[in-house]
Length: 379
Image (cartoon, rainbow, N blue to C red; front, side, top):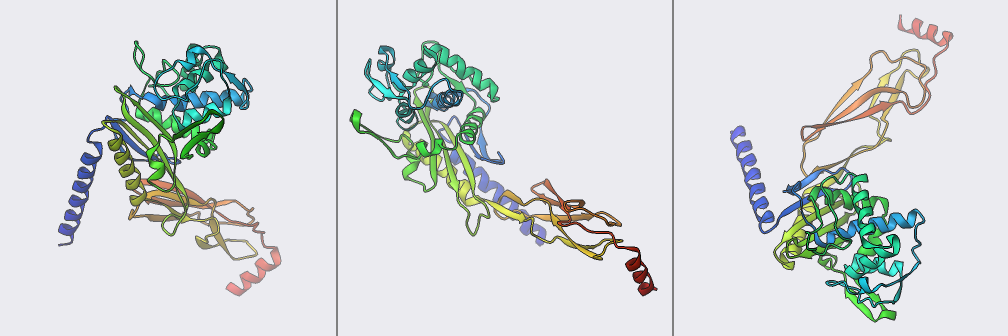
Protein backbone atom coordinates (compact mmCIF):
# COMPACT_ATOMS: atom_id res chain seq x y z
CA UNK A 1 0.00 0.00 0.00
CA UNK A 2 2.85 2.35 0.88
CA UNK A 3 4.50 1.75 -2.52
CA UNK A 4 1.23 2.53 -4.30
CA UNK A 5 0.84 5.84 -2.45
CA UNK A 6 4.42 6.85 -3.26
CA UNK A 7 3.96 5.88 -6.92
CA UNK A 8 0.77 7.94 -7.18
CA UNK A 9 2.55 10.91 -5.57
CA UNK A 10 5.51 10.66 -7.99
CA UNK A 11 3.21 10.38 -11.01
CA UNK A 12 1.17 13.39 -9.90
CA UNK A 13 4.31 15.45 -9.42
CA UNK A 14 5.65 14.47 -12.83
CA UNK A 15 2.40 15.26 -14.63
CA UNK A 16 2.11 18.51 -12.67
CA UNK A 17 5.51 19.59 -13.96
CA UNK A 18 4.61 18.60 -17.53
CA UNK A 19 1.46 20.72 -17.44
CA UNK A 20 3.39 23.66 -16.03
CA UNK A 21 6.07 23.21 -18.69
CA UNK A 22 3.59 23.21 -21.56
CA UNK A 23 1.79 26.31 -20.32
CA UNK A 24 4.96 28.30 -19.71
CA UNK A 25 6.73 27.50 -22.97
CA UNK A 26 3.70 28.12 -25.16
CA UNK A 27 4.21 31.14 -27.41
CA UNK A 28 7.91 31.63 -26.58
CA UNK A 29 11.19 31.01 -28.39
CA UNK A 30 12.91 30.12 -25.14
CA UNK A 31 12.83 30.57 -21.39
CA UNK A 32 15.15 30.28 -18.39
CA UNK A 33 14.96 30.70 -14.62
CA UNK A 34 18.14 30.46 -12.56
CA UNK A 35 19.33 31.18 -9.07
CA UNK A 36 21.83 34.03 -9.31
CA UNK A 37 24.48 32.71 -6.92
CA UNK A 38 24.43 28.94 -7.43
CA UNK A 39 23.36 29.18 -11.10
CA UNK A 40 21.04 26.24 -10.50
CA UNK A 41 18.51 25.91 -13.32
CA UNK A 42 14.97 26.01 -11.97
CA UNK A 43 13.30 26.01 -15.35
CA UNK A 44 14.58 26.05 -18.93
CA UNK A 45 13.69 25.52 -22.56
CA UNK A 46 15.78 26.11 -25.70
CA UNK A 47 18.57 27.96 -23.90
CA UNK A 48 21.42 27.04 -26.28
CA UNK A 49 19.95 28.18 -29.59
CA UNK A 50 21.24 31.48 -30.99
CA UNK A 51 18.40 33.95 -31.50
CA UNK A 52 17.82 37.66 -32.10
CA UNK A 53 17.93 39.62 -28.85
CA UNK A 54 16.78 43.15 -29.80
CA UNK A 55 17.41 45.64 -26.96
CA UNK A 56 18.72 42.97 -24.60
CA UNK A 57 21.86 44.08 -26.47
CA UNK A 58 21.96 47.13 -24.21
CA UNK A 59 23.19 45.07 -21.28
CA UNK A 60 26.48 44.65 -23.16
CA UNK A 61 26.43 48.29 -24.29
CA UNK A 62 26.07 49.28 -20.64
CA UNK A 63 28.86 46.92 -19.56
CA UNK A 64 31.32 48.37 -22.09
CA UNK A 65 30.34 51.90 -21.01
CA UNK A 66 30.91 51.13 -17.33
CA UNK A 67 34.21 49.37 -18.01
CA UNK A 68 35.33 52.38 -20.06
CA UNK A 69 34.54 54.61 -17.08
CA UNK A 70 36.40 52.29 -14.69
CA UNK A 71 39.41 52.21 -17.01
CA UNK A 72 39.50 56.01 -17.16
CA UNK A 73 38.73 56.28 -20.88
CA UNK A 74 35.75 58.51 -20.10
CA UNK A 75 34.16 60.06 -17.02
CA UNK A 76 30.59 59.54 -15.90
CA UNK A 77 30.03 63.31 -15.81
CA UNK A 78 31.42 63.83 -19.33
CA UNK A 79 29.42 66.10 -21.61
CA UNK A 80 28.54 64.25 -24.81
CA UNK A 81 27.94 66.20 -28.01
CA UNK A 82 25.23 64.48 -30.04
CA UNK A 83 26.04 63.77 -33.68
CA UNK A 84 23.60 63.97 -36.57
CA UNK A 85 24.05 60.22 -36.97
CA UNK A 86 23.03 59.48 -33.37
CA UNK A 87 20.11 61.92 -33.44
CA UNK A 88 18.68 60.25 -36.55
CA UNK A 89 18.47 56.77 -34.98
CA UNK A 90 14.94 55.36 -35.04
CA UNK A 91 12.81 53.35 -32.61
CA UNK A 92 12.82 53.94 -28.85
CA UNK A 93 14.65 57.18 -28.26
CA UNK A 94 15.68 59.94 -25.89
CA UNK A 95 14.64 62.48 -28.54
CA UNK A 96 18.23 63.62 -28.99
CA UNK A 97 18.99 66.55 -31.30
CA UNK A 98 22.09 67.08 -33.41
CA UNK A 99 24.78 69.15 -31.59
CA UNK A 100 22.84 68.89 -28.32
CA UNK A 101 25.04 68.41 -25.25
CA UNK A 102 24.00 65.78 -22.69
CA UNK A 103 25.77 64.33 -19.65
CA UNK A 104 27.00 60.76 -20.04
CA UNK A 105 25.28 59.75 -16.79
CA UNK A 106 21.94 60.93 -18.19
CA UNK A 107 22.46 59.01 -21.41
CA UNK A 108 23.23 55.85 -19.43
CA UNK A 109 19.94 56.15 -17.57
CA UNK A 110 18.05 56.70 -20.81
CA UNK A 111 19.56 53.49 -22.20
CA UNK A 112 18.72 51.31 -19.22
CA UNK A 113 15.32 52.81 -18.32
CA UNK A 114 13.86 54.12 -21.59
CA UNK A 115 15.80 51.77 -23.91
CA UNK A 116 16.98 54.75 -25.97
CA UNK A 117 18.53 53.67 -29.27
CA UNK A 118 19.87 57.14 -30.08
CA UNK A 119 21.64 57.33 -26.71
CA UNK A 120 23.46 54.06 -27.46
CA UNK A 121 24.91 55.45 -30.67
CA UNK A 122 25.80 58.76 -29.02
CA UNK A 123 27.71 57.05 -26.21
CA UNK A 124 29.36 54.60 -28.61
CA UNK A 125 30.69 57.51 -30.67
CA UNK A 126 31.81 59.36 -27.53
CA UNK A 127 33.84 56.39 -26.29
CA UNK A 128 35.16 54.94 -29.55
CA UNK A 129 34.71 57.72 -32.15
CA UNK A 130 32.41 55.45 -34.18
CA UNK A 131 29.72 52.90 -33.43
CA UNK A 132 31.60 50.33 -35.50
CA UNK A 133 34.67 50.57 -33.25
CA UNK A 134 32.45 50.41 -30.16
CA UNK A 135 30.78 47.23 -31.46
CA UNK A 136 34.24 45.69 -31.78
CA UNK A 137 34.69 46.36 -28.06
CA UNK A 138 31.34 44.69 -27.39
CA UNK A 139 32.32 41.52 -29.24
CA UNK A 140 35.74 41.51 -27.59
CA UNK A 141 34.13 41.85 -24.17
CA UNK A 142 31.74 39.01 -24.99
CA UNK A 143 34.69 36.69 -25.60
CA UNK A 144 36.45 37.88 -22.44
CA UNK A 145 33.53 36.91 -20.20
CA UNK A 146 32.80 33.60 -21.90
CA UNK A 147 29.90 34.46 -24.18
CA UNK A 148 30.83 32.04 -26.93
CA UNK A 149 27.52 32.09 -28.79
CA UNK A 150 27.07 35.85 -29.07
CA UNK A 151 27.45 38.25 -31.97
CA UNK A 152 26.84 42.02 -32.07
CA UNK A 153 26.55 44.15 -35.20
CA UNK A 154 25.36 47.36 -33.52
CA UNK A 155 25.09 48.99 -30.10
CA UNK A 156 21.31 48.99 -29.60
CA UNK A 157 19.81 45.83 -31.08
CA UNK A 158 17.96 47.36 -34.02
CA UNK A 159 17.75 45.17 -37.15
CA UNK A 160 20.27 45.86 -39.92
CA UNK A 161 20.36 44.79 -43.57
CA UNK A 162 22.96 42.17 -42.66
CA UNK A 163 20.99 40.74 -39.72
CA UNK A 164 20.53 41.35 -36.00
CA UNK A 165 22.45 40.90 -32.77
CA UNK A 166 22.21 37.32 -31.55
CA UNK A 167 22.85 35.41 -28.33
CA UNK A 168 21.80 32.18 -26.70
CA UNK A 169 19.63 32.48 -23.60
CA UNK A 170 22.43 30.86 -21.64
CA UNK A 171 24.77 33.66 -22.75
CA UNK A 172 22.14 36.25 -21.82
CA UNK A 173 22.12 34.86 -18.28
CA UNK A 174 25.92 34.98 -18.08
CA UNK A 175 25.90 38.60 -19.23
CA UNK A 176 23.15 39.64 -16.82
CA UNK A 177 24.92 38.02 -13.88
CA UNK A 178 28.25 39.56 -14.84
CA UNK A 179 26.74 43.05 -15.04
CA UNK A 180 24.95 42.76 -11.68
CA UNK A 181 27.94 41.21 -9.92
CA UNK A 182 30.50 43.67 -11.26
CA UNK A 183 28.26 46.74 -11.01
CA UNK A 184 25.60 46.18 -8.30
CA UNK A 185 24.59 49.85 -8.56
CA UNK A 186 23.10 48.96 -11.95
CA UNK A 187 19.99 47.87 -10.06
CA UNK A 188 19.62 51.37 -8.60
CA UNK A 189 19.05 52.51 -12.19
CA UNK A 190 16.98 49.63 -13.55
CA UNK A 191 14.51 49.74 -10.65
CA UNK A 192 13.55 53.36 -11.40
CA UNK A 193 9.93 53.24 -12.57
CA UNK A 194 10.01 56.44 -14.60
CA UNK A 195 12.77 58.49 -16.16
CA UNK A 196 12.20 62.24 -15.81
CA UNK A 197 14.63 64.78 -17.22
CA UNK A 198 13.10 68.18 -16.62
CA UNK A 199 15.67 70.22 -18.54
CA UNK A 200 14.86 68.18 -21.64
CA UNK A 201 11.12 68.02 -20.98
CA UNK A 202 11.43 64.24 -21.16
CA UNK A 203 9.39 61.67 -19.26
CA UNK A 204 9.03 57.96 -19.97
CA UNK A 205 8.07 54.92 -17.90
CA UNK A 206 10.57 52.13 -17.46
CA UNK A 207 10.05 49.60 -20.24
CA UNK A 208 10.14 46.77 -17.66
CA UNK A 209 6.47 45.97 -16.86
CA UNK A 210 7.29 43.83 -13.81
CA UNK A 211 8.41 46.79 -11.69
CA UNK A 212 4.76 47.60 -11.03
CA UNK A 213 3.64 44.00 -10.70
CA UNK A 214 5.95 42.17 -8.28
CA UNK A 215 7.57 43.61 -5.16
CA UNK A 216 11.33 43.04 -5.16
CA UNK A 217 11.80 43.17 -8.93
CA UNK A 218 14.65 45.61 -9.62
CA UNK A 219 15.67 44.92 -13.23
CA UNK A 220 16.74 44.33 -15.82
CA UNK A 221 16.09 44.86 -19.57
CA UNK A 222 13.41 44.52 -22.21
CA UNK A 223 13.70 44.07 -25.96
CA UNK A 224 11.61 43.90 -29.11
CA UNK A 225 11.99 43.58 -32.87
CA UNK A 226 9.80 41.70 -35.32
CA UNK A 227 12.34 38.90 -35.53
CA UNK A 228 13.24 38.75 -31.82
CA UNK A 229 9.68 39.09 -30.55
CA UNK A 230 9.06 40.52 -27.09
CA UNK A 231 11.90 39.74 -24.69
CA UNK A 232 12.57 40.40 -21.01
CA UNK A 233 15.43 39.71 -18.64
CA UNK A 234 13.95 40.13 -15.17
CA UNK A 235 15.53 39.83 -11.76
CA UNK A 236 14.15 39.81 -8.24
CA UNK A 237 15.71 39.91 -4.79
CA UNK A 238 14.00 37.53 -2.35
CA UNK A 239 14.45 38.76 1.21
CA UNK A 240 15.26 36.73 4.30
CA UNK A 241 12.08 35.47 5.97
CA UNK A 242 10.70 32.70 8.14
CA UNK A 243 10.94 30.50 5.02
CA UNK A 244 14.22 31.80 3.61
CA UNK A 245 17.17 31.71 5.99
CA UNK A 246 19.18 33.89 3.63
CA UNK A 247 18.29 36.35 0.83
CA UNK A 248 18.65 35.12 -2.73
CA UNK A 249 18.23 36.48 -6.24
CA UNK A 250 16.53 34.98 -9.27
CA UNK A 251 17.08 35.84 -12.92
CA UNK A 252 14.28 35.03 -15.34
CA UNK A 253 14.61 35.26 -19.12
CA UNK A 254 11.70 35.18 -21.56
CA UNK A 255 12.49 35.41 -25.28
CA UNK A 256 10.32 35.64 -28.38
CA UNK A 257 6.91 36.31 -26.85
CA UNK A 258 4.15 37.19 -29.32
CA UNK A 259 2.94 40.27 -27.45
CA UNK A 260 3.73 42.58 -24.53
CA UNK A 261 1.04 40.89 -22.44
CA UNK A 262 2.43 37.42 -23.11
CA UNK A 263 5.92 38.65 -22.20
CA UNK A 264 4.70 40.19 -18.96
CA UNK A 265 2.49 37.29 -17.91
CA UNK A 266 5.05 34.60 -18.70
CA UNK A 267 7.76 36.52 -16.85
CA UNK A 268 5.52 36.96 -13.82
CA UNK A 269 4.60 33.29 -13.81
CA UNK A 270 8.27 32.34 -14.09
CA UNK A 271 9.39 34.45 -11.13
CA UNK A 272 6.37 33.43 -9.05
CA UNK A 273 7.20 29.79 -9.71
CA UNK A 274 10.70 30.36 -8.35
CA UNK A 275 9.52 32.28 -5.29
CA UNK A 276 6.81 29.78 -4.34
CA UNK A 277 8.74 26.57 -4.90
CA UNK A 278 12.33 27.25 -3.86
CA UNK A 279 14.10 28.49 -0.75
CA UNK A 280 17.51 29.24 0.71
CA UNK A 281 17.73 26.89 3.67
CA UNK A 282 20.30 27.06 6.45
CA UNK A 283 21.81 23.63 7.04
CA UNK A 284 24.61 24.35 9.54
CA UNK A 285 26.31 27.36 11.09
CA UNK A 286 29.87 27.74 12.34
CA UNK A 287 28.52 28.15 15.88
CA UNK A 288 26.74 24.74 15.84
CA UNK A 289 28.25 21.96 17.95
CA UNK A 290 28.17 18.95 15.64
CA UNK A 291 29.60 16.41 18.05
CA UNK A 292 31.61 16.11 21.24
CA UNK A 293 34.58 13.78 20.84
CA UNK A 294 37.29 12.32 23.02
CA UNK A 295 40.77 13.76 22.44
CA UNK A 296 43.62 11.63 23.76
CA UNK A 297 46.45 13.21 25.75
CA UNK A 298 44.41 16.41 26.12
CA UNK A 299 43.86 18.55 29.21
CA UNK A 300 40.18 18.55 28.25
CA UNK A 301 39.27 14.93 27.74
CA UNK A 302 36.23 15.79 25.60
CA UNK A 303 36.14 18.56 23.00
CA UNK A 304 33.32 20.07 20.92
CA UNK A 305 33.75 20.14 17.16
CA UNK A 306 32.20 22.66 14.80
CA UNK A 307 31.65 23.25 11.07
CA UNK A 308 34.43 25.25 9.45
CA UNK A 309 31.89 27.25 7.43
CA UNK A 310 28.22 28.13 7.38
CA UNK A 311 26.24 26.18 4.80
CA UNK A 312 23.03 27.33 3.13
CA UNK A 313 21.49 25.38 0.26
CA UNK A 314 19.27 26.68 -2.49
CA UNK A 315 16.72 23.88 -2.77
CA UNK A 316 13.17 23.10 -3.74
CA UNK A 317 10.83 23.29 -0.77
CA UNK A 318 10.29 19.89 0.80
CA UNK A 319 13.61 18.48 -0.42
CA UNK A 320 14.82 15.58 1.73
CA UNK A 321 18.18 16.31 3.35
CA UNK A 322 20.43 13.71 4.98
CA UNK A 323 23.58 14.29 7.04
CA UNK A 324 26.56 11.99 7.52
CA UNK A 325 29.27 12.68 10.09
CA UNK A 326 32.79 11.29 9.83
CA UNK A 327 35.28 11.76 12.68
CA UNK A 328 38.95 10.78 12.56
CA UNK A 329 39.97 7.90 14.82
CA UNK A 330 42.22 8.40 17.84
CA UNK A 331 42.37 12.20 17.78
CA UNK A 332 45.33 13.31 19.87
CA UNK A 333 46.48 16.59 21.42
CA UNK A 334 47.99 19.01 20.78
CA UNK A 335 45.60 20.63 18.31
CA UNK A 336 45.49 24.16 17.01
CA UNK A 337 42.36 26.21 16.48
CA UNK A 338 41.00 25.36 13.03
CA UNK A 339 42.57 21.89 12.79
CA UNK A 340 40.41 19.50 10.79
CA UNK A 341 39.16 16.45 12.71
CA UNK A 342 36.37 15.22 10.45
CA UNK A 343 33.77 16.14 7.88
CA UNK A 344 30.04 16.63 7.58
CA UNK A 345 28.46 15.48 4.30
CA UNK A 346 25.04 16.79 3.27
CA UNK A 347 23.08 14.72 0.74
CA UNK A 348 20.21 16.23 -1.28
CA UNK A 349 18.77 15.82 -4.81
CA UNK A 350 21.48 13.29 -5.74
CA UNK A 351 24.08 15.89 -4.78
CA UNK A 352 26.51 16.16 -1.90
CA UNK A 353 28.10 19.08 -0.07
CA UNK A 354 31.01 18.58 2.31
CA UNK A 355 31.86 20.82 5.26
CA UNK A 356 35.07 20.28 7.23
CA UNK A 357 34.70 19.76 10.97
CA UNK A 358 37.23 21.54 13.17
CA UNK A 359 38.16 22.41 16.72
CA UNK A 360 37.54 26.09 17.42
CA UNK A 361 40.28 26.58 20.00
CA UNK A 362 43.79 25.39 20.82
CA UNK A 363 43.85 22.03 22.60
CA UNK A 364 46.93 21.59 24.78
CA UNK A 365 48.65 18.30 25.43
CA UNK A 366 48.35 17.11 29.01
CA UNK A 367 51.52 16.98 31.11
CA UNK A 368 53.03 13.79 32.50
CA UNK A 369 51.63 14.23 36.03
CA UNK A 370 47.99 14.46 34.90
CA UNK A 371 48.50 11.55 32.51
CA UNK A 372 49.84 9.49 35.42
CA UNK A 373 46.88 10.43 37.64
CA UNK A 374 44.43 9.47 34.89
CA UNK A 375 46.23 6.19 34.45
CA UNK A 376 45.88 5.40 38.16
CA UNK A 377 42.20 6.40 38.15
CA UNK A 378 41.47 4.09 35.25
CA UNK A 379 43.12 1.05 36.83
